[in-house]
Length: 222
Ligand code: CTP
Ligand code: MG
Image (cartoon, rainbow, N blue to C red; front, side):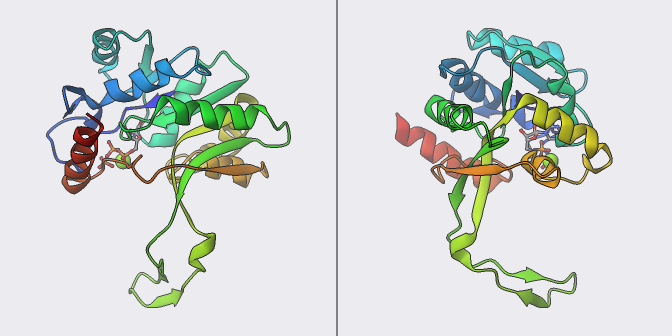
């Protein structure tokens, strides 16, 4: 499932980020191509900006990828919950269209790792944090400094047992507007979530600076 229903406000490109040009194609196309090339990915469902379902399917067609687009929700996890209604397999992998540099191999790695251990509910891509992170009050008074070696910057793709994610979404329906990834929902339901170390190059395009960096990384790939 590709979460692509955001409005892209912080990028400020005047429209949904999924359709903003990245290299020679719309940003969404890159995630579709990577997911399609992954051996462990079958059916692809896109959560599209409401009213942009047809456009999302056109982007997929242009990229030579078979995918179905459904209407996204107001918040990211609501979009994921809506797309989840169309999941037909026992495992589901959720990915943000805002991470166009994710590789097919990374999709396969998170799914394979999850498939190999029945005790785990989810496997999520993440990179070790390199900055020192401080927790502060609203008044910016530092409250504490978590030990950096235990901190991970979480990415997508995130692979889930479909039932575990469905149950977590149903149990925390009132929190879908406030969570920042889907694994949080599974954690809150008591499910085991495992980190799969991924490259920090799989960055999220949020701001114009991210876009500049991502385009340099793309150019380097050749
Ligand atoms: N997303 C979504 N549905 C929403 C909001 C976000 O599917 N209602 C998706 C975005 O399309 C993106 C991913 O979730 O691929 C991560 O969200 P974010 O980076 O916040 O993207 P936007 O919400 O588009 O950006 P902004 O918050 O700056 O408006
Ligand atoms: Mg957003």
